[in-house]
Length: 258
Image 1: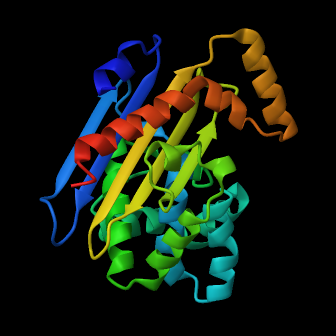
Image 2 (image 1 turned 30 degrees about the vertical axis):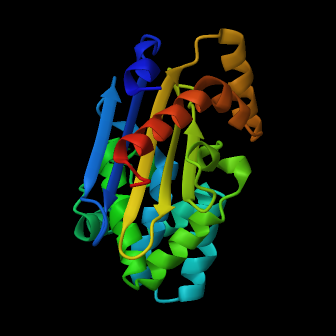
């Protein structure tokens, strides 16, 4: 399988991105891989939650309070706990701290500070930010280490088979999915941080936005969203194979096994 094969038959209006980074002292030279079809930037709120957890810790003096919200934000993708961290510290501070730690600059695309999920990103930016998180963890940052442990604790029901696709059962992962009533696409995305030892880190990111063309399926999806019911199976049907394929090809292109 190749990127060309995966992206060749994307439906009209779809977007897909993938990116990967392999870096660290010792071992093979650093390498980056990225591919994009469609929009240059996408919203993928869930992928940013571990980064928000990482940078908010120094701004919340009560460590137990921070942990009480940060852990479920990462492990079960709790929106309410993420929002608590986001508003308690403040969006400009959160995004500036991510920039200071990773070199990746993100901004709110609208004037509503409560919309943490509105931040638009590119896959290569996400990979860069997570590589910084991973290397901070192995360098002794206890907060970064805790965040990666929580990512390793993300259950299979929220991992979309990414660990299996990457043959990396010990990977820390964060996946997300969303499809608002006013959007034409279902968004499904994932990041994986693979253990390599020492200061080395490998990060793989996949992001998709697939049109939901079947009107009856879309109506059922919106009904389940309105009732607060799970919709992961809909995202698996629309984007699961593509997402896993993009991440597996990215990892192969990185030469992770070298």
